[in-house]
Image 1: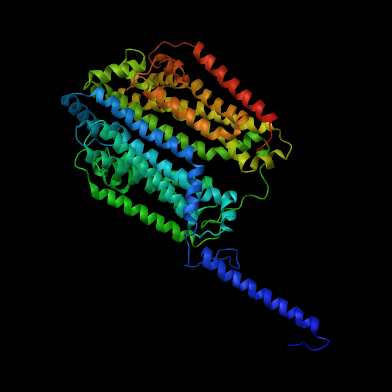
Image 2: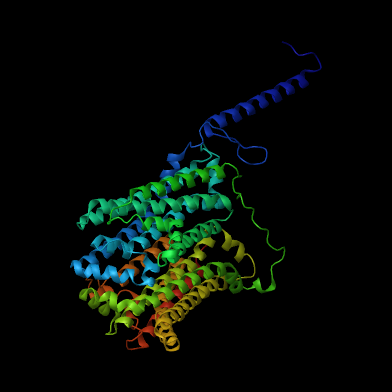
Length: 580
């Protein structure tokens, strides 16, 4: 066909436009067939039932590659904790009468019930589950929360999922990959826990029930994190919401376990379900099915919510901030306080409740440990002096100081996160030096550690003093004991500062690995029979065994000097190196 003379240019242009339009429509149809969706007029990805999970396997492999160190550390910490507890109890409670006496003492002590839950039976396995089962389940829950948020909302907030979504990837692939990797890691933890218990010659059925219950605890809270990741635009907020649900679950069962009239609260809590599986006293397998059903329901709810929002947005809209910042936020120190105050408040609440319960439990520690002469000897050795209650309190403050060190490390690592996600560059573009900006976070990390330990000393003194009638003297005595632990926790926070400045590529993995190793050696080293020179490698080994022991200021001064030296070295290196 020949175009009319004089209209050849118009005809050619119309044909080209029609061909381009046809090509665009075909490309859009092809994209829907391959990716399971396209981009709608409002920026949200259009729904399609073709391949919504396309690319899930590839994203799961990428997640495993990124988390190879993170997952190994968590698996090691959870399995190692149970293995060390099992090893200790095998040597502490060898006679049936000792185990029965201990079980009776636990059930008669409301503080023990609130802290670790009830004990089901007086077998060795039942006592091990009472001692470590609930805390390992909480650890598995934290694993599930951190892993899912990392590969969903955190990647979305950083813009990585937008880049990935431009390829042949289905709408729900990222969520499915995150859940698959996290649930797989939890199942590996459960399997290894069962293997460890069977290796110690505990009943196979109970060991499998314990492993399955722990794994399902992690899976349920992975589902909770998958839901919260859809609700908010911030990974930090989503993580905080999920952890709040975990804390509420622990608090519900802490109130319901000691009080028969309120036992229904324990049945409301997912952690209460995990307790009531009672692995070594006639396992309740049907409760495991309930946990699995809840996990599936949460994953399905997360998928539904993910299909109803735009990429990068949350279902709960972010509240707009003030157009102008308050004058007091002009300082890096006050800005750090503004950003840290919510997290610090949560830590303070956890420390206050934990210390009060542990302090109240000290009143009945003598009757509990009389059931095993070996346990009595070991706790006295760990406390470093001859007072049984004082030895117990010294161990309590050692445990809380490790937790305070974890707060310090997490606070310092915000420097690394801000640098990696570009916030540091925006901050330093103004009239703020690197040292001022970084030192503000370090100040709050070190000050937060001291504040948490002071709160622990006061609350523990109140808990114990309320039961003995000597509140004033006990508060003063235990406050001094708690503050003596602060320099050792400062050393670990200072090491994190040094890693930020000197080794930014391995900062996160190295800081948490050192903390985990130090915690295991300090809390379980004596029970495992480690050599004294190994125990002396941890900063907590040089803290005076207070209350009740002899106070010596020299080791505390040296620990403070070491912590300051590490922090100064880290800040100096951060000032000189390039931002990542």
